[in-house]
Structure formats: structure tokens, C-alpha cells
Length: 113
Length: 228
Image 1 (cartoon, chains in turn brown, green):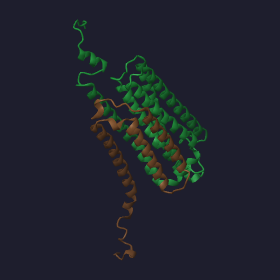
Image 2 (tube, chains in turn green, yellow):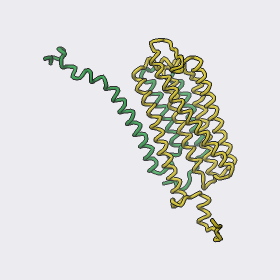
Image 3 (cartoon, helix red, strand yellow):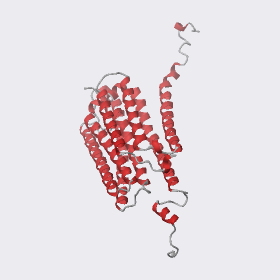
């Protein structure tokens, strides 16, 4: 990998990333003043992920690290995803226990004993 | 140990210059190992903060109304200003790493100190916000009050999360300032140059990570129900 010769970032690149991050901050604040219902959080997170990607890719120099290090970075995100997904699916389905087989004694389903 | 009379060879001089440890074959391999190790640490940090973000996601789904109502007590201006301050500090940190890569000692010290100034400004603004929360009785467990009263309990969950998350983030900032102080001292002594700057780069990674945490905290804590 390219790590064997030090890749020195251009000042212009760093300043451009900085400018983009500032613009995205203004954008996310401005967008939050509108009512999009469920979409507000989606837009906010999309902007945050874009900003974080810029920091990771340029400022943290992941574009220049070895494949192994990149694999580790991705693995970290996968574990984060697993934690959030499994916890959320647990909470989302907890009430289901109390209404298991909702059709069992419900005449509307035509299956009542 | 007695001083050796044998003059140091080219290889030894190079090893000294690049701070190469004997268990690494080349300085490049050493740097790759350090980078991998630092990222491994940062992943544990991602999951550490991730736990709190997960708790936030769960409670927000459970009590969306109460969570949205808390935005009234969040200072978007100060939060936004702090986001900008941290982004600026990330830029100066990246420029500091660049200065080290180019063996520009004075620039390195300047950018490191600038980064520390931005970091301190962030903490001061955070302190102002914490003070406002205290004055407005918005610290859970300390004479907490809330209007509308039916959100009293659930709003406390958000304010608890607010103090856990921003508090842990602030502690990370303080640790970062300590690390930067160490870097400034080392840079002052002229330790870093084009062939040895790994500590600057690794602490830079840490600093950027702390910036990323805030990038997510800002919209989640300040802009939930933000309406003009």
C-alpha cells in the first residue's frame, strides 16, 4: 500500500474539507427548522454521516492507510450496526409476547374455538 | 552500561532518527502497526459512544414527543458555534500533522497550540451551556422542573442522556488537550520531523474522532424539535 511513501495532503484539500464541513453544519441547522415529519431525522443523519465520512477519509487519512486498517474501520462500523439493530429489534418486538397469536380467540378471524 | 567504542553504523543512526523499535523491520512497518493499533482503539471508542447512541435511539423512539419538546431548552446558537469551533480545531490538527510531515517545527507548534485554543473555547462554551441548564433546573435529579408537566419523567431521560453524552465527550476533549500539551512539549524539543511524526498523527486521529462524535451529537441533541 501507499503507506510506504508518506502522502502529504495539500493545504487546499484540507481547507476545502473544512469549508464543506462548515457548510454542512449550516445546512443541517437550517433544514431542521422545517417540518418534514419522520424525514427530519433521516436528513440530519445523512448530513452527519457525510460530514463524518469527509473527516475519516481526508482528515484521518483513511484514503492512504493499508487495506488491513481499512478493514478494521469497516469492522468497527459493522459491530456498531449490529449493536443498534439487535437492540432496536428487541425493543420493537417486546410487546409481541403479550399478543401472541392475536387471531386465537378473535371471532373476526373466524378461528375462535 | 559502559559506552561503546564502536562508531554507530548507518543503520543504527537511521533507527535512532526514526525511533525504530527492534521488533519492527522498517519504520514504515512500525507506522502501519501504530495506525492499525490506533484504529483498533478508536473502534472500541465508537462502540463505547455507540452504547449511548443506542440508548438515545431507543428512548427517542419510545417518547418522541417528550424528546422533541426539550429542544426549547437547547441553545442551537451555542451548539452550532461549538460545532464550528471543533471543525476548525480539526483543520488545525490536520495542518499540524502536515507541518510535522514537512519537518516544519515552528508551524507544527503553532498549529498544535491553535488546536488547543479551539479545544479550550469549546469547553468554555460547553461550560456556559451547563451553567444555563443548572440555572433553569434542567439537571436530572437536582430540583428538575419541566413544562408541560406530563413530560416531566421522559424529558429527564433526554437530559440524562444529554449530560452523559456531552459529559463523556467533554472528558475526551480534556484528555485530548492533555495529549496535545505533550505533543507541544515534544515538538518544542524538536523530536518530530519528516521521518518521525507518528505520535502527532495518532493523537490527530484521536482528536478527529472526538470531532466526529460531536458531529452526531449536535443534530441529535440540539435539533430534535428545532422550529423557528
